Image (cartoon, rainbow, N blue to C red; front, top):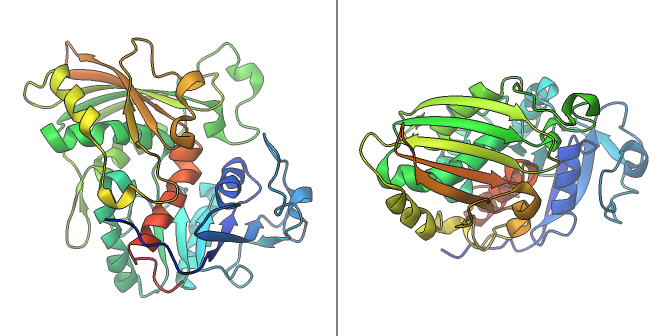
Length: 357
């Protein structure tokens, strides 16, 4: 299916616009062909200031049109855009996102607060686009015309992109996950340099539980009113490592029956994902690429594949405990965060599920 572009650019807002993920949203939306970056919102200490004065910009140059924009409060009485991208911290996201949904706005959330709610879609467009049907269940059950659609934890997204083709083909029964997560995943200023330089921190608060639950929801089947989670037993270890961008995920997979690496490789090579997600503005040419090089993927060499929207997979080989083991890696603030929300919004617009915009 070829996606349908809107007849005019849709005004959008970014909540939490001064933070690291908010800045990634701004980069992705500043010259977007479907969306017009109309409003920026942040905390009370930033509201009322020009964005250039409110934000400590990280990395490359700030988009020219953004610096002079006035920062608004995260309040639906001030922010009028019909589509709202939330980069808010989970400590404040819950109440704010609910307020916008009740006010009739469609919220694309990067926060964890509503991911596991039965009526809230947790979506990777190439993997489970049909889960967006939950949005109608949500609107009917909660009595609002707005809605909340979430993307997953950044490490969960990298894992699911690699696992979805294998689960579809063979059915996964058990899974071991070990992550090596970049410091940018902790936001800015993030992890203190004396804690992370020359070190590995084998703890990221709440991360392992999120990985174990979110993977099962995203690989689950859509029921009439909720997602029937995939019946996969998962053990996850989450580690912070001294890498700027790019989460690496090592996976050992048991299918409950013999599946060799050759069969797994064939499935991974052929996979293209849901057709509805292939020609959206943020869609990469290949959402998943397979490398045969023995020492790849690597964040330094592969993180910007597909403008940060491609997940790279390699080292597919026999696992002596389970069936197959492999490594997946992707850009945590693009495919794993802001880019994931933007792609979800594009899919909603293209399939007519965004409501009146």
